[in-house]
Image (tube, rainbow, N blue to C red):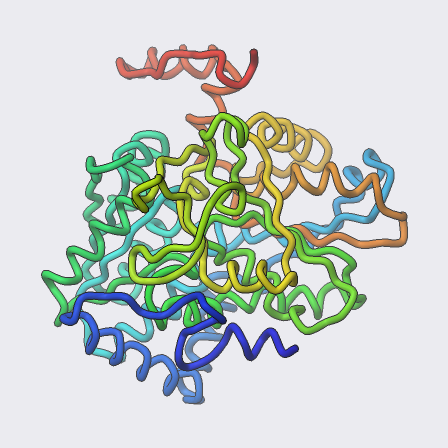
Length: 418
């Protein structure tokens, strides 16, 4: 089975998943984007410009760090972290943002529309818009707008208009819907820079292409074949970025880690493969958490970037085929992983990434010392300052905020420490 070929194709179908379910008005827009993309990736000039930006603007290749202290502490497999948090803007999102930004310029677009949850995709979008001289509007669920306020500030400093969305659950799902409505209203001069491997064709294929650089670098950096690859999965962009290069390699186990939130039984989670079902939403067919009427269900995660009711169609396909195994990490496990990685390796990872780290902490001790795990550190943790200080009850930081005149300091609760 050629998995690479199966998930990177020109029709955007992956078994029964994927496709393009959009209003008729957007069909020619998506056709133009697909045509531009597939022509560009065969164009030497386009590829040279993209690779130059990867090297001299993002700072690629990102480091592959041997987590020796953590490996020794756990007493099992050797653990390596692909540290995408050291990219410009602090996450893997800049990889596809630069690629799509170059495509937008080729199509003569003057304005970029984007959605964001954790804020890293929005920050990367605002960054490339400043670099390329494009207008920028970013939609963000009001809940995420509040809990990821540092990234809102940085986006605004870069010239972006950040619009909080108050409909629905006020999270990533609702931001995507708002961005699609904007594109329908402004289809000619605007490009919708979707931030993951979800959405209608060609977005899943296109973002897979731009993110695959992650795994390509790992193969060169590690020099030996890893036994396990582990990544968190929201939409799936950082996971497919790590996995793609190795999909057709035998004897490599791939594990995707979803957001277990407050536990599966609580139903306050975002683990689509724990009680989800097939459906069509936001332009594509995949696995979604849905209610009895087929409407997208409410979700919860300590990490804004994984707080989404759908998963990329390629992820659903690869899970169905048995190529990727899926599990989940709860909020409590994630905070423990955050603190463990910080205190053993001096690395403050994003809460999204810490879902994968939590799984590695469980997995490594069950393996042999000669076995190797590569975990994708999709981003760095400074964006989560307000979430973590609240959950870890750092009253000193909260007092600092009060001294600076902040009157809306969130109340402490016992949700993660009972």
